[in-house]
Amino acid sequence: MQPATQMWWFTIGRVLATVVAGLGVGWLFGNLGAGLAAALAVHLGWVLANLFRLEWWLRHRNYADPPDVGGVWGEIIAQVVRLHRRKRFHKQRFVQLMRQLQRSTAALPNGVVILNAQREIIWFNRMAAQLLELRSTADLGLRIDNLLREPEFLRYLGRQDYSNPVVIRPTIGEDNYLSLQVAPYGDGQLLLLVSDVSRQMRLEAVRRDFVANASHELRSPLTVISGYLETLGQDPALDPDLAGPVAEMRRQAERMTSIIRDLLELSRLEETDEIVGGAPIDVAALLSLLRKDVLARAVHPHEVRVRVESTAQLIGDDPEIHSAFSNLVDNAAKYTPPEGSIEMRWWTDAEGGHLAVSDTGFGIPSEHIPRLTERFYRVDAGRSRATGGSGLGLAIVKHVLQRHGARLEVQSILGEGSTFTCHFPPERLTRPPVAALTTEPA
Image (cartoon, rainbow, N blue to C red; front, side):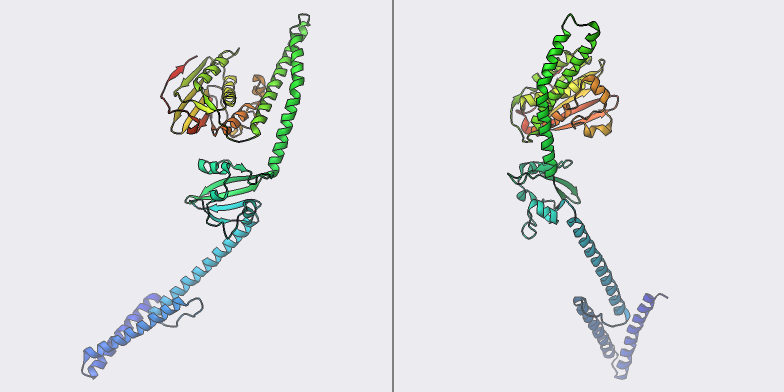
């Protein structure tokens, strides 16, 4: 028989014995009811006394020993003791785990800030306090966007797209930069990671200055070389055996000139990430002009279509937008065979304005897509050299879109073609969208 079963049989036997004793006393005094009532009253008093002892011990169990009683009450107290010990064990483990977590996060070279769903600070480590100048006594419970009022960071929080970090300069006049990235977790909670990228930004500035200065200094010699090569190529006294090499030198000189021009443009765009204003741009007219440029090529895709599905104009810097759209269309034309087709589509919806440049070219392997906007990155270096690509076009597109609060989306199927889509926010449009206006075939 199980101990618990024995205990309950013992308790039932005790109650029966109490009843029998009460009846016996009542029989001796000639009143069975009074004897039974008195016996049950004594038993009830014993139960209440045990209940009082249990309640007092539960309130003072941190320093008082459990009462020594038997029967069911003893088993109940034993169960409570076991639960209390198990709870204390898990509490100690949790406290140790929290201390280890705090020590490990304190040793991290990066700052860590935990935010709740309302973006209020719950906890931060020592490095975050140092980098963001947070105070543990005063800043806990405050909203992070009330403490960090950098416009770039506020826009980053508002976009709800935390895939890429944002770099801010918290102290005006000092050459220090912080990289901030948010990682959502749990039920709306956020993990803010902070790192000091001042050294990387300084190196990047040195690199940009070097590239800009070197490109500027190379532009004049290349202009002279290109001029002499053009004159030499048009000289009727030129040896026919040298005509081919001179033409190749002219082509390479033009390619170098194009690279330097793109480098200077990219350096200008990288000088600042500030959002630009601008004036309304007639997207339909711009796409029509780009279509004519493609058709003017010696070799071009068989079909070049323009679909304008909205009269909304795009507010932006005209030269920059023209450069970005031209680079996208130029890439599509370069990597689409003559029997293929290109489509430029402009439309608007509740999320803003969208320009998509689609082609039926070679396509891009998926592993290359995340790096397409890196400068000088090429999916196929041999094919890029053959088509005269500099590897800077998509980098220019990325920076132009960033300066207009827009983003680039790339979709591609290997062997079937690619689609590059520019997504502009609604505030970049001048008037509500109008459906399906024109389709311009080749």
